[in-house]
Each structure stands twice: as C-alpha cells, then as structure tokens.
Image (cartoon, rainbow, N blue to C red):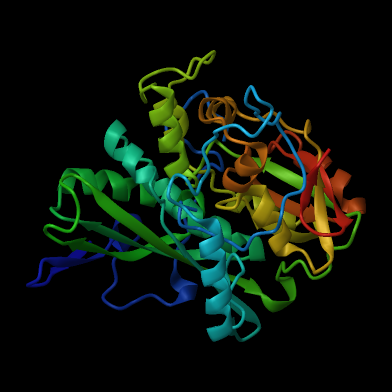
Length: 404
C-alpha cells in the first residue's frame, strides 16, 4: 500500500497491495488478478438472513397493480401513510433530471454505461449507499457498509452481462479516524472478493468542518467487460418471456430516507426486535446488499437470458420496464416468493400504500432476469440447489407493472 498525503490533507490511496502484489507501474487489464470467494459470503452478524442508494432515481413507469392490502383510514379514504417524497426524495424530479441529461448525453439511462473497445465493451457504473450510512453511524456497524458500496455498482454492470474487472472507492470525512476507515475499507475488499474483481485504488478526502464529527460519505466506481456479441440488452424480449427473481437480503441500499422516517414514527429503536421476529431492526436493516455477480454470470452461461434488471431505487415499478422494448410490460405473481418481515413491518408501521412500497423497495427480490419461456424451466432446474430463484411473472403486451 502506498499513501501520498497532499498539503491540503487529501490522501490518495492505492489499496491494490492489500489484495495483490504491488507494482511500480499500473497493471494492464490482462494482468489484474481476480479473487475467489464463496458466492453468499456474509458477516456472521446476520446469520438469520438469506443471501443503489436513496439518490438513485430511474425513470418512472406507472404501476397499475397492487401487491399488498391497501391501507385505508376509518373514513374509507387514503391513509395518512408515509411516502418517499415525504421523506425528502422526489423520484419524479430525479426522472426529469435524467431526461434532461439524456438530451445532452444520448444513451444515458441504462444500469451501466458501455464504451466500445475492440470486440468488447467496457461497462462502467458508479453509486453510493445513500442514507444507509446514517444507520451505520447509529449502530456502529461499519465493516459491512463497504459490501453495500461494491454491490451497488457491480450489480448494475452485470445486468449487461459484463464481468467486473476492477473497483475504485472514494471515502470522505471531516477528521480521519483510521480504525473506522479500516473497517469500511475491509468491507470494500470483501465486496470485491465476492464479485471477483480487483480493488484498484481509491481516494480518502479529509475535509474539516464539511461533515459532522464521526460521519463520512462513500462512493464507488466499477468497470467490467463483455464481448459485443454477448451483451444483454433486452432488445429481443417478447411477450410471454418469463421473469426469474433472485432474493434480496432485505432492504439492500435503497429507500433509507423513508426507512428512517418509518423508524421514527414507529417509536422503536434499532435495538428492538421486529415484532414477531427474532432479529433486531438494526440487524435486518444493516444486512449487506447481495452481490449477484457470480449467480447472474452463471445463469447467463446457460443461455436464454434476454434482459436483467437490478431492483434498486424505483423498485419493481421503475426498474423492470427499463429493460423492455417499447410496448411491453410485466405481470408479477403476488405469491411467488415470501416478502421478508422487515418490509411487512415497514408498510404497517409507516402506513405506506402498496404503490409506494413497490416503487421504493425491492420487496425481497433484488435482481430480475428476463428469460425465454423455453429456457425458463431448464434454468430453474439447473440452478436448483445452487441458488434460490423464483419464477415471479411474465412479460406482457402493454406498459408498466401489474400484479395478480
């Protein structure tokens, strides 16, 4: 590891040495060693849980369906339920910004950005972990937040079929607490190992008076590669194709502004157990985001995968239609998977309407693959026993997402 400390106290880090041999010159892509680890490697802090930040705001596709029972008040009208906008996040404003950016930079709007290089594309993505950091500060759990950071970017770029190559991070704080920062970076290293990519470097910025004492912010950047003839782009999706869902570990790294508002309204603390469950709210909410890279690449190798959606900010409502050609929508089968207790608790405690839940949270499904009808059962049979996966619905003519 080599650190260069500038006069303005910004520190440039290269943590490549922590996961591979150091070199005086940057490695070329072909020399980057990739690291192996178990697909579902999680901290022992979360033994009861199965294996993009609040600011991710993809374009909106109207949700015309219902999944959970709509909450009504005594008069029969809508409840005084919380919304993401009430919590300070305006998805529609974010969608409008994306629309304007797309005018200046055509092609913007996918989960990852593709850059042509010979017979391949480099696929890049960037993200943070949003206000999940607020819970990290409250719980003191810092050693898994780095997994979330890596997951948000590598899960985005794998939707194109790209294998992650390397990751870069940015860690900013008012006063550098070396022990705390080490815990955060340890999680980043763990996430890189889970996704088979190299932690190539990063930046630590110490900026006095900019952040509250003991707090920090994170962002990450991932780059992967996919052959041009192997890109997963959704162009061949047709009505009748099947949706396969991969389970999440919980809330992942989206919607935490609303989560925190619900927590405040409920009167419970992060140390309290979810009603009727044996896990605390802090443990459930801080469960690290699943890194789907190995699962998804394995499923892609079996053939028949046409499109992939990472279920982040915007939930099912906005993310699934992002991979469809115009004129297609999705029907989701309500009972095809078990919704984790933390989502049921949030809806009840926050009196959140169904549409809002489906447009904000992953509801227990963190990645959705669109596969041909003929390949769907074969894929499910072949991955049975290796990964948990559900047939959650199908592609239909029309637009938006509905439920049955």
